[in-house]
Length: 86
Length: 86
Image (cartoon, rainbow over all chains, first blue to last red; front, side, top):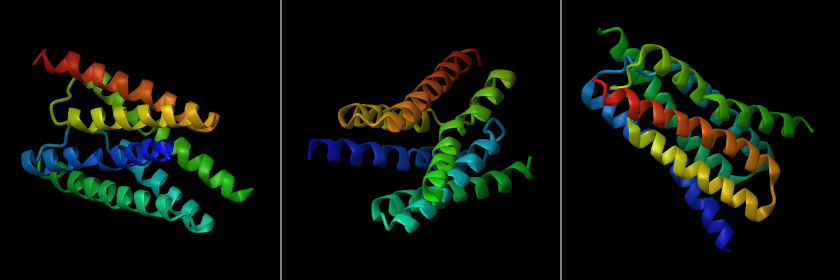
C-alpha cells in the first residue's frame, strides 16, 4: 500500500510540473529561452501514454497523462503566441 | 505486443524530452524565461519513480526514470550556473 502512495505522489509531481512554467510564461509573456521541442516531445509522449492507457483500460494512466497532455498543449499554445510578438 | 511498443515509444519520448532544452540552454547560456520550479518538481517526481521501481524491482521504471533524473538534475545545474551570471 505504501508503494502505491509513492507511485501516486510521483505521478502527481510529474503531472503538475509544467504548471509553474505555464504561470511564469503567462505572467512574463517571455518564452524565448524555452525549447519548443521539449514540449512537443512531452506532448507526443503523454499522448501515446493516453493511447496506451485506453488500450489497456488503465484509468490512472489515462487521467494523469490526459491532464499532462492538456497542460503541455497549453504551454505550446502560449509559446507560439508570445514568440511571434517579439 | 503492439501495446508494449506504444508504451516503449511513449516512455522514450518523455524521457528524452528535456534534451533539446538542455542543449539550447547550454548553447545560449540564457535560462531566465525557464521556471526552476518545473525542473524541481520533475526531479522530485522521477526520483520517487526510481524509488517506486526499486521497491517493485521494475527495471524499465528504474532505468527510464533514472535517466530522466540525471537529465533534469543537469538542467537545474545549468540553470543555477547561468542565472547568477546575469
